[in-house]
Length: 307
Ligand SMILES: C[S@@+](CC[C@H](N)C(=O)[O-])C[C@H]1O[C@@H](n2cnc3c(N)ncnc32)[C@H](O)[C@@H]1O
Image (tube, rainbow, N blue to C red; front, side, top):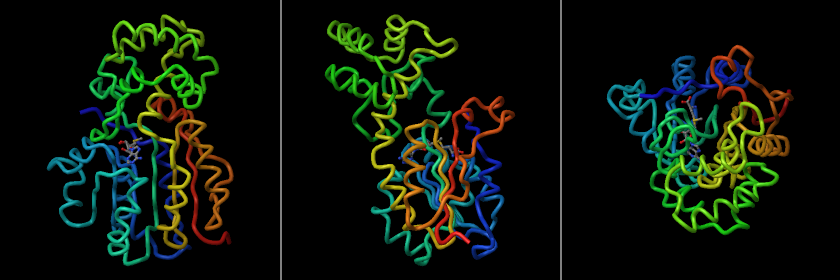
């Protein structure tokens, strides 16, 4: 089983709760991007009284947590933890009554979103996220979703493809790749990540040293297929409604478009304030150990008045 190293764990633990705000530890924790539960496990160990509601849209992550040899099996059996397969963006409207009943109307003292994909998703060729390993052109986090990366690549028209790569990959001139893509799919539809990566590499070449030319194209596809940016701002706003007074909402993002949404939403919220003015990034030692940490940014919002 491929594991996932939780990023920015130390600062996240340090900033997770301020006992001056109320109880000595958070009573209820919401984890909207459970993954392999790395952050969740560390927080549960730090706060042994804390109860947990965890969510992931990926059935594999849910099955893993529920299996009898998972570190969460006991907590799920004993009622310390509740796990849902859901998109965190739909969760609050779908389960509002349940949340109110569980937290006795107080809401969560601590909430976390660790956005993006997990290592088990990225590193399994069969999930179709990788340009290093050939797999089906899939990229869905939620296996119940119909729309795949192959649907996008084979059915979007020229203008739509250019827009996806420009908007989500921040590629200024994707036109040559899109032209080549349209020509090739006229002969045979794209089915594999390897076919797409080979076309991008042939058309673009390795311009930036050390950076695979497929990186930004694959990121754009992933963001579009999973609608990762859509509705994120309004979801953050909704989440602050479910935060208890003095509670903290922490978000880890992995690229500038995502971080901009988080920063704007937190800065503009009338319900609270940013705990740290400056964004928190991983120290060099963590970046060396875990390449995913290089682009990780943590922002922490607290509900209530700044004292
Ligand atoms: C970066 S990983 C989280 C890793 C986790 N913090 C850990 O330490 O193991 C992101 C996870 O969030 C899930 N995810 C991403 N967007 C989601 C969404 N909108 N709703 C629910 N889950 C989502 C992905 O399926 C993936 O499992």
